[in-house]
Structure formats: structure tokens, C-alpha cells
Length: 360
Length: 260
Image 1: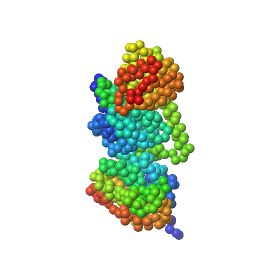
Image 2: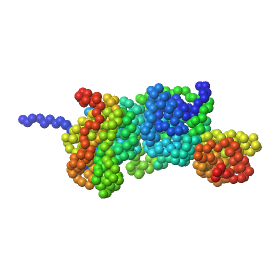
Image 3: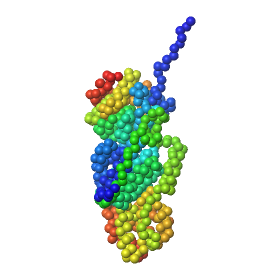
């Protein structure tokens, strides 16, 4: 299909439609509302389900119900709304139904603002809701990647009966750039819903979708089952992109929009003769610990760039296991770092000087 | 010569109930409410197309007792979960089974908006004026002056507010098609409750909108009285505070009941 000029929020919503999403439940919140608006028009037009819920709490539980019925279903929101969804996400993890969520992050904590941020890393990547689980988390850096990962998200969600979260930020949601839409997939017929789904106990024993295991022995067995699932995900679903890292002496690690900005800075630093490369994790869970660890063996130092106070930084340090110094440059509060700022941080690391955060 | 003995079964467990002993306390009316729902599903031939949604509270394990597909919702969220199920499976019969803490406290927003949307689901609302599962704390429907473990001196309306009358509230919603209150304290009332439960499911089958049957129920364990005294307590204390009756009846309901 030809490339079109697409806004991120509309792009992922339409990508979900084309991936066969049967229902969207959501609540308006800036900076992702255009996705909800797109679904409000598009889903009924295709005979599919759109409901504007009374809250994000209700939206995620409608998603939970629809997924329990065996349908391909999604919601999207932004940071404060996603916080409200944590209860539902924990139940969804605890009952292993496939769900896709897109989080278009904004500045925080609290009401914060509506500007781009990566402040939800800890909440999303480390589980978020109560109990032992980690959803698959995919972090796009372009509108095209946002589209492609949204389609992939539905497939991974069903493959593993698991939550898949697209973690993007307000700039990606609001940005327009040329991108190509996937072809329209047919919607799965109701008669072909999975055998575990709630479809009515017609000629079979009842199905139960539940996250309760009142006997601790059974709960632990279930916990182990989830652990095995997550070990499989860690083995098979790591995604990342490395640029100019082969001969690099400085390794920059950044995801999403920060990764895209860091790429410009890395190119500029190369022009100055600094041997620097970029590792951009695309899957944040499973995290590319092995690749970052390997990078830490090749370079003299690492620099982490994020649009938060240093959340993925912890994971990079874990992966580096103290082999090399790990510096950090981050902007918060909805401020997007300029490539020049990141370039300056690379120069500082190159010169063996500390990297200072503006205002710190 | 003697007449041959003819054995005929006149009372049996409904197909829509499993052969599992319940965890409910002696004298609790949950068992009666379960049976009324199950008999209705049998009579209307709905068992194999029904999906239930259990709450958090004493009936959290309802899915063990109903022989139908079931989801176990987060506390108060059953109407939202039921919305998701029903919208994706409009041919199914979807009901929630919720207690007063679940429905009228933590799930107040979800039930109000499910009614507001005219969500075509049936809600069985068990009002026993107390939190049972957690051991007898004040519920949104606890009566003024009623002693609970979190209102040990009796519910003081000055500081702890007034009971929520959910039928009266939900009857105001244009999406409500059938909202009634019945009681389980004696046989005559149980029979009336049965008719209401049946009508509620018929309302859903006819696609008329949101339906709810509130059932005044007993909790002898947490009320600290005998099962028999608990039934009397419903009659003497709960019914005056929560009058029985029809709060919202869609104009098409009369025709439904007539066509039986």
C-alpha cells in the first residue's frame, strides 16, 4: 500500500482495525484522544463495537469482559488513565486473556501535563498492577513502527494469552509522518472463538475465566505457570535495533522517541569523530539484557537517554553488571530533549566528564 | 391386590446448578437466590447460552455453583465486564450477581452507567445490609443505627451517611427497562422474587434494556442472630427502609408476562 501522511494516534487505531480488532473501549484523555475519536467513527461503520466507558476503570473491565468472550479487543489511554487501569490489568494477567493496550505517555506524576514523557516505564515494564506478572511491552520510535507493532501486539497477545502494551509518548501520538498501513485482515467469526472463551456451555462443560486461586498451593502453581510463560517470552520475543555499535567506544541506550533523538545525536557525534553507537530496545519487556550486556563488553562507557528521571537506567545498569560507567541524560515534565543536548552529553562522556542534567 | 406405586419426581436440582456443596453459612439466602436464577435459566431454556459474572464478596465463588459459563470480575466491576461480554456476544444471555458492597459502594459508577447505557444485561442484586465476606462491616445499605464491626455504635447518619436505595436510583435511568425489589424472607415473597427474576431474564431476551432484581437477603452470621430471627429482621427492619415493589417497568413488560 502507498505511504500516507498519518498522525500517530489515528495510525495505531486504524492499524488495530486492520489487525482485526473487534472492539474498542476507552475514555478520552489527551494526548491520545484522536485514537478514541477514530474508533468512534470507524468501528460502528464496520459493524464492530465501540463504547465510550464512564472511566478508564470501566474501560479496562469492559476489555476484560470482551477478551473473556474470546474477541480481539483493545483500549488506549495516557498515563493517568493507564494508572486507573492497573487493577483491571492485574486481573487480566491473572486470568490469561489476550488484551492490547496503547499508552501514549504524558508528563507526571499526578495530573502532570499533556506533553510527551516516558515517565511510565517503571509502572508499565515492571508489571504495574499487583502480583507477579509482566506484560509484553513494545516501544515504537516512528509512526510506521507504531503501526507495525500494533498489528504484532494482537498476534502476540493471542499467541501467549497475555497483555501486550504499546508504550509510546505524546509526541509519537500527535506527530504526522509518512507511513504505510497494513492490509485489512478479516475479523474472526464468532463461531471460531477460542475453546477457552465464554461462549455459553453448549454441549460442553462450563468455561470459567477467573483470577482467583484461594488455595495458596494452587496459586503458586499458577504463578509458576505464568513464570514459564514469561521465560518463553524472554527467549523468543526480544526486539531491538543497533546502529553504529560495531566499533563504538560509547554506547548510547535509549528507547522510543528518546531513541530517535539519540540517533540524530549519534550521527552528529560520528561526524565529530566520536566512536559512538546506539542500542534502541524495542521490546522493553522482555528487556534485551543480553544485547546491552554484550554492548557493555565492547564499549568503554554507556550513556542512557530517557524522557524521565532515569527509569530504564536501572535495567541498563543491571545488564552492564558494573563493567563500564553508565551515565544518564534525561529530561522530565514533558520536555523533549533536543539532539544538541544529547550530543553535548555524548561529548561529555567522550571527554570523561560527568553528564549534568539541566536544572539539577 | 394393591395399587402400583407410581413414583414421580416433583422437585429436583435445576440443570443450571452444579452438584457442589456451597460455602454459604447456614441460614444465608444466597442459596435461595442461586436456585431462583438457575430454575429460571432452565425454564427459559437459556442455560447453554448464559454467561454469568460473579462479584467480589460472599458470592465470589458463584461460578462453582452455576452450571453455566462464568467470569469472576474485580470488585464492583461486574457490570463493566458484563458489558464487554454482551457487546461481543449479543446472542448470549449475560447476568451479574452482586452484593451490596460490590454493587452500591465500590461499583456504584459501573452499575449506574450500565443502566444509563441501557446495557442489555440482567443484574441480581443481593442486599443484606452488610459486608459478609470480610466479616460484617458497614455496607452502603446498612440501616441507620445498625451495628456492624465498622459502625460498632450503630450507623450514625451524621458521620457515616444514609443507606443507598439502588432500585430508586437506577429507576431514574432512561436505560433501565425493569428494576424491582423483592424479598427472600418467606415462601410467598420467594415466589414473587422468582417471578421477578424470570421477568428480568425475559426482558433481556427481548432486548428491552437494563434489568435488575434487588433481593432483600439475610446474613445471620454477621447480624449475630439465628437464621429464623434473621428472616424476621428482614421483614421488620429492612422492608420499611427498602420498600418492596416495581420501580421501573418498561411498557413492553406486561406483554412479555402475558405471553407466558
